[in-house]
Image (tube, rainbow, N blue to C red; front, side, top):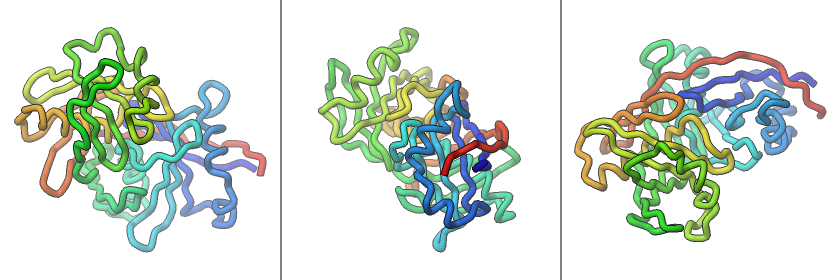
Length: 262
């Protein structure tokens, strides 16, 4: 069977998206999504992506999204995928303001132009500050998923590639985490390099950007909004009492069909 999909990216964080608004309900219900995710997200021999996203109708929001990492495991929330889904739902609902049901609750989105999407990720929470793991001191932040933020004076040595996997699955954490090595560039800009849980090094991470800003504010940063520079591009995080707003462009890479044995 040929399964239609959309490939989208946000700052290089890329996803294969299945549209359950148009796919037969019975097929979607029977589809082994973890196995399908691991298959279609394989680099070089398949489509290749950081994750698979299923977008479906919802009774309580404009749409619902389920996220699977490239290894088939579930992800609770992803700011990059959330923005991509909002962009797709805009055409379906003919509206620029949207609500999307996630495993972390209903999130809101606003599309400012053809590419720029802003989503409210909710308020991150620092679970533990100055936690020492494998010689690294960092902050453990929860924003629907877990992030370990390690501040460094220099990121040129790519510490995420050398230490990301070890930290991701370390017994110091209640479950595997996303790992971010960060440095403050000036009062309104910071840089991060990313090791995502179950995906490895990625070009961007929306919830990671918000979690890093949360950590920066706890350590004395005072800017009302911060630009987060990642390997694949930059996003803007605006903290607020109603949640952290994540703003950045998204892009449609291509549409296609994937051959799948049912």
